[in-house]
Amino acid sequence: MTRIPTPTVELHRETLSNGLRVVLSPDQTAPVVTVGVHYDVGFRSEPEGRTGFAHLFEHLMFQGSESLEKLAHFRHVQASGGSFNGSTHPDYTNYFEVLPSAALERALFMEADRMRAPRITAENLRNQVDVVKEEIRLNVLNRPYGGFPWITLPPVLYDTFPNAHNGYGDFSELEAATVDDCAAFFDAYYAPGNAVLTVCGDFQVDTAVELVHRHFDDVPGRPVPLRPSFGEPQPDRERRQGLTDPLAPLPALAIGYRLPDPTAGFQGYLAYEVLASVLSDGDSSRFEQRLVHTDALVTDIGASCGLFGAPLDARDPDTFTITAIHPSTVDVNRVIEAMDEEIARLAADGPDPDELARITARWAATLFREHDRLVSRTMAIGAFELLHGRAELVGELPVMVATMGAEQVASAAATLRPDSRAVLIVQPELGQEA
Image 1 (cartoon, rainbow, N blue to C red):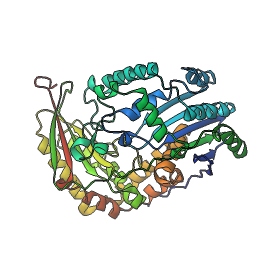
Image 2 (image 1 turned 30 degrees about the horizontal axis):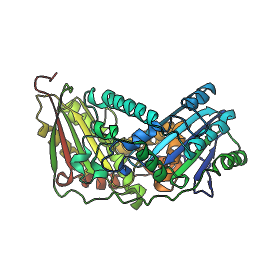
Image 3 (image 1 turned 60 degrees about the vertical axis):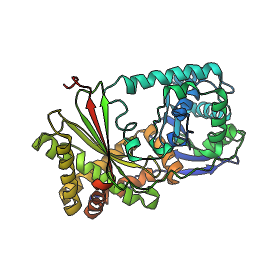
Image 4 (image 1 turned 90 degrees about the vertical axis):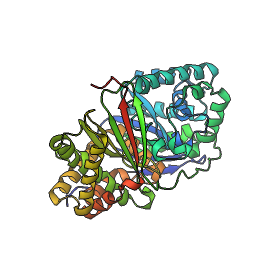
């Protein structure tokens, strides 16, 4: 067993009268503070006929608010020497600012102002629809393997609209969005009671609590939407689908399996994280050794939990994903058979002690390194609190991973069966193979 220290992450919680949940994590190691807000709405919550709406609304939240004209948010953060961004995920949308600690109140004011009333105008909407369309062209339509596998695999594995649709959005549906649609989306999902505010860094807790109350207490509370279950039955057979990518230089393959619900037990879920690392993390991993070096079947291969590759970043259902790129001279079934054989070996024997110790130590070290960055720690605390009610996971995950046993990894591997998976086969357009 790898010995891993438990990091000390100080956490303080507060819930305001309007329902806003607040998590404070002081850390005086550097004169920097990060403010993040996670809203409980993502791709899976957007209505049918409005694909891409959650991501489009993320863009609109940067277009001014009740007290700030368009671009003022950008100017205030950058004038303080800070940075900011936002992102949309299957089950949440987040926003953050990283600033010198003296600018904490500025960040809280800006987040409270757009939580109260973003500037949703026809001009801003049309402008941001164009921006999102250009982002889709850049990241999906005009890029080899664009949207692979996070857009292209879910429709093969899942049946329901929330789980299967394209979270980036269809151009015609984005263009059909109205100001009234945006106002209704804001009223439904951007209520204080549907959000978690996280503050990490160089501050005194009492001062931060007072500032949070000063700026967020008067944000009107609204009813919080009932969050539906997105669960659906496991596949009862292997599902296969082909796709032609006119820009792909080589064929590609994505395989998706359903992950267990993390609310049933974090250790059971994390066994798949360790399994993914045993299979594909580093040159000595099982897939790299077998499929890249020994059999020369693929040029690139990877395995991960979640469509975005972050641990515990979504509620149930979530996806264990294997992707590979292979020469056009290699039959895709040979690649799949080799993968299945390596997974079966792990299911039968588990990883050996040295292999498991190496993987868990590396994985824990990666978590330590990632959460040493203040912005990453802030985003993890907010997401863990929102999705799982456990901000403490930011300190507990390395130890959970380090204490994983070989039998747990073997049990996880045994569930990756051919009769309950999705297989997406990507082929270059005829004549495009490199």
